[in-house]
Length: 107
Image (cartoon, rainbow, N blue to C red; front, side, top):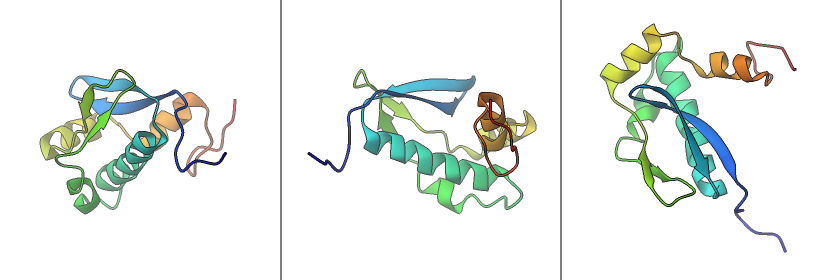
């Protein structure tokens, strides 16, 4: 039977106040929110420097596999700190070996 969402375990990475943080989720809808959040983060810290999409995530939380709520960072001060640390989606993808537009490597 086809469903609109699934319960497969996914371990995703999000920025936290003390660096990267892993979040395990069993809900594809929560994983989709995190994916949209990453797009907004990349747009905010990238060359566009446009944080309008990131503002939509201000009061947003996602629910992890244990049922705990995890808040998504949207603080501009935190964004600037993360940018200074060379923190971007393309950097993360290059470390995992996943192909993206800037890094054409697959391991």
